[in-house]
Length: 434
Image (cartoon, rainbow, N blue to C red; front, side):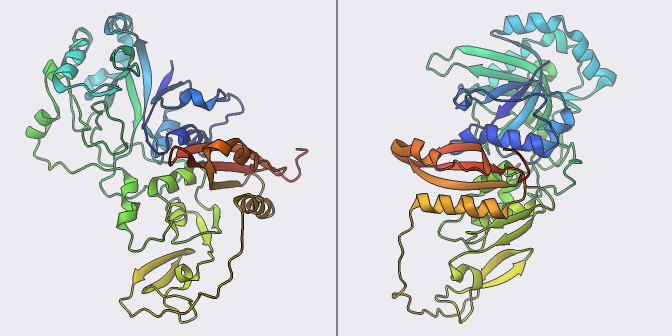
C-alpha cells in the first residue's frame, strides 16, 4: 500500500518542500540510491498538497515529522477513489484492516481534511456517516487520547467548480508535532518519540485551510456519528491549551534584538533541514548578522561558528566598535546573544569608509571557491541568491562548479520581476573521479 504525504500549502516556501523532504529522509537513514524519489520535474509538485510515496517505514515518518516545517502528516492509504461510493465499496472488502488496527477495543478518532474547498461541520459529519456500516463495529471513540487516528482526506480540482478529484481513507502514522512547551525535542536523531503532539492528545484536521498554524484545526468524532471536539471537551474537565508548532518558540518577535536582515524563522529551519544539520555537525555562517541561522542550527545540537563584517553586531558595547546601538554581547555555544543595556549611544564617524563595487556574480564565485576549500567531503552549502526573473537562467548558471553537486534551487517570489533562490549544494569527495 502507498503512503500519502500531506504538505502545508506555504505561500512563501512551497517550492522547498521536496528538497526538505529528501534531506530529512537522508538524515534519518533512508537510502535513496536503492529507490530514487521525486526524479520528475519539480514543477509537477508545485502547488500540490498531497504526494504519494511507497516508503513503509513508520518510525522513519515519525522522525521526519518531529522536525519538518512543511509536512503536516503522513497517511497510510487503505483506499482511494474519485467518489465516496467507490471508496466505500473498496473498504467493504478490506474490513480486515479495521479489525487488525482496532482490535481489543482500541480507542480511535477521525482526522478530516479537505484541500481547495471549505467543508462545514454538518457536511463533515455527513461524509463520515458514509462509513457507518463499517465503523459501527468499533464504538470506542476517543478524541482526547486515541490509540489510532483514521484519516479522511479530500482533494478538489483547482477551479471554481469544486469537483472532487480524489478522496483518501486510511490510518495516520504521523502528524505534525504540537508541543505545549514550545521546545524542540532534542532527543537522539534515531530515537525520536513517537508521541505526535507532545501531550498524548489527538490532533485535528483543517477546514480546507493548509496554513502552518491553522486556527481552525478540529478533531471530529464519529461516535454516534454526530459528535465534535466540543462534545469531548464538555465531557472532560481538562483545560484545553492552545496548540502551536514547536518552532514558534524561536519566532523573531520573541527575540530581544533583530538585525536589519535577520532570516525568517521558518526559512532558517527549512535551510537547516535542507543542509541535513544534526547533532555534532559543525556549522559556519560567514554572514552571521544577529545569528538567525545559528540559533536554528544550535536547536539541532550543532557546533556553531559565525562571523560578520558588521562589527556592531559582533562586539556590541565595546569602545572599539565604530557604532554602538545600546547592545551588549555574550557568547554561548558559538552564538552571539544580544540585549539592550540602556546605556547612552556613542557614535563614531564612519563617513570616510571607502565603498567598493562587488557584484553578485563575484560574490557567488568567491563563496563557492571558499566553500570548496572549507567544506568536508559531502558537506552541504546552503545559501540565498537574489535573482531577477528575466535573468534567472543566467543566475542558475553561476551555480556550476567543478567541486559541487547542485542539489536544489527553489524559487521564492518577491515581486512580479524579482525573487531569490534557496540553493543547496553538496561538496564532491576529493578522492572521487568526478
